[in-house]
Image (cartoon, rainbow, N blue to C red; front, side, top):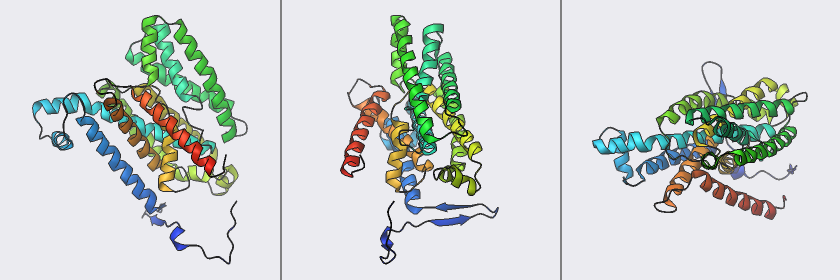
Length: 359
């Protein structure tokens, strides 16, 4: 803990400023200008990269042409390419990234650990196990695989929650139980691959990589509906989440119903990671890195839920654009790109933390 001498005046330029907003209904909340500006810039970046992504492909279009087509002023061929072929993929990329960013911020905040990410504590592996079970054992179609991923993620979330429960769910125990669950589920996934036929194993491996190729409105509309309900619900519990970061006792003293808020937030985050994985497969590192990058950008304590949502959307849409452009005519699965970028991010974080003397 850093102690500031009372004889040394604090530098005004380093003082954090925030504004309290009170509504007519008696509600009040604080706005930090830097965090708000960062969130707006990330939103603009995500939307801008979405437009660029829609314009990329075998029939390239400028951002101006894409915007004109979205406003209804394009040719018939442009409208078909934009609205039917490319826009669903961009929408799925934005929504999956937003869902991953929100769920990562929730779990890292609840566990009070930057490694408390859904793809580290087993939820992504649980969704993969559900999907592989459908592919290998039941030869299911795409809809059945999506349902299997949802069920697998929800069952994993319930198991981790109850195994970590002991007079409440505490962060350190949640991370340990989650890492153990991830290890067991990874072993199960490998076993299922070995039992599959060559065709099913190839199909399963492609799904496990994480890809946005071929995504259409049938994936976008359910994902949009779930995100439209759950992301505002998570954002509405932002104050409770920030209070819980100070510890359960402090949160109780400040009037937060800790277990109820934790259960609502964890269930929402599990559902978000489940629908994101069902729509695009297990995409690594976005849920892990988006909240940390958002925190560094906003320089604000707490979960930074809004910035994490926008950061996740920006990261995934940029990664999908890189996946399409990196090798020319050959498209990479977006999960490969996020894995490379995430590995570079972890190496950079390791170097900076070592230079700072924290590891």
